[in-house]
Amino acid sequence: MKNSLPKLRPALLLLLALLLPVLRVAAQATVPAEQPEMADALRQSGKIYVVVAVIAVVLAGLLFFLISLDRKLSRLEKEVRE
Image (tube, rainbow, N blue to C red; front, side):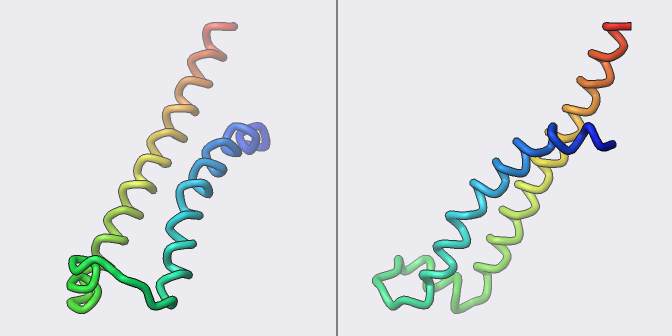
């Protein structure tokens, strides 16, 4: 299991790279600026949280899939070497 940490590092860096812009936009949401009408409507009705949750679930699913695929490939590569 200790050897899997270096293999997970690129996936974690990718996840961080994808989340940083989202966090930056969330931090700038407190600054008044012109927002599209759709964003205002979603925010007022509370549906923006559903959109963010769906995006987070999709990204988490992709990350889980990539990690499981990496483990399966590593296992197959090990079997081929032996």
